[in-house]
Image 1 (tube, one colour):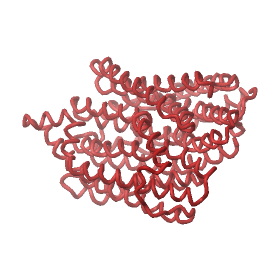
Image 2 (cartoon, rainbow, N blue to C red):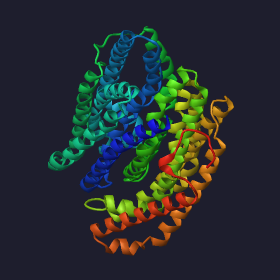
Image 3 (cartoon, rainbow, N blue to C red):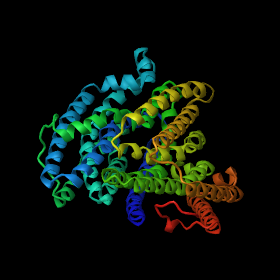
Image 4 (spheres, one colour):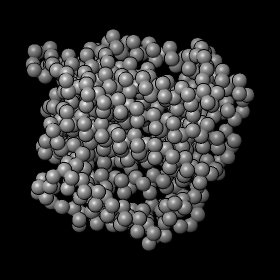
Length: 522
């Protein structure tokens, strides 16, 4: 099982790597076009709301509820019953998302006022910042249909994942990034409001993602005619699981929207600085955390359906160790190299040195929570695979309320950086509660092997940090170099950190390529 999980994880990570690299290219192009000014604030705001709903209807709550039920049907029911389930799910979800999408397009000014209250208040008083509210409402009308496309893309991806076809859904986001990059290069520069051109890129990208999945569904004999099935037993089970998961799986996204709400009252650039730092955070989170969570959910669901409790625990332990192995050095590296990475990736065109410095503060704050974000991604499937969505919801409510308190504590003295600190702390709290809950239920707890593994990984990561700090050039040197020299030195630092980390792992007896899903001595 461990070899199969490792192979699936590598496939997803490889496809995700391509997508994330193009995502960084996309952000570099946007930074060059708009920097961190008003236009960037508006586009990132208008793109964040449909993306938040995407996590609810598509990749988040829906997938967590749908995959265990679909797995159960594929293991215990006939192929015809499984196809009927797909038909009913597709039709029911389609009607709901169509209604939500239409409401979102029509009510875009209301959404802009709700989540960008600071801009709305400025608009009411005739202040210059009020123009952001009008533009945000307009761009939202263009970006909101992305929700419809990506929902069915995620549905198709979930079906393919349960059948071991992980590469397709992991590669699909590439098309969104390509569409936005093309819009940023060929469409937006010629427009008075470039954010509108980028919004069109989001719309086209969503459409292409949706169309890309169809041939693969045909190959799997999983392309069905949608039909309404609100009272179908499988749909009832999915929506029963999904309703609480709508909140529980999206706590971090709700926290990010709260950050956006508060940031709309702060200085111009706050939303953009948070966005650029969050994008760099999402790179390792998607490459490692989400990839590992994607491959273990179907495996955990099968273990639960077949009442294989020992295998369930071993699979969970494998996922946790994989997160520690990859997440801990990524977290520390992100913190140490925050400013150099921002310089190399974004400091050109309209993106200034001041933007680099401001974004680096929020990146370090977000980076401190990377391991917690990853742990949440891996521990949550321990509940969803057992068709328990209520427990994570309770923890999610506590984490979100705590985030509000943390926002009040840290946002006043630290501004937008305080918002990032609050988000990281709430993720830590959420991850801790998820683990304690699994342990209390007797479902999973860290094995002795995992604790020893963690200690060795921590020592190796700290050695890596020492090497990076020792080799890190001064800010004056970074400023004196041209873009090519900055890129070369950043690559050199990353390679030196990676080599030092791997060497320490080997000296301590850890062979990453031989990780097994079992509790054994190191």
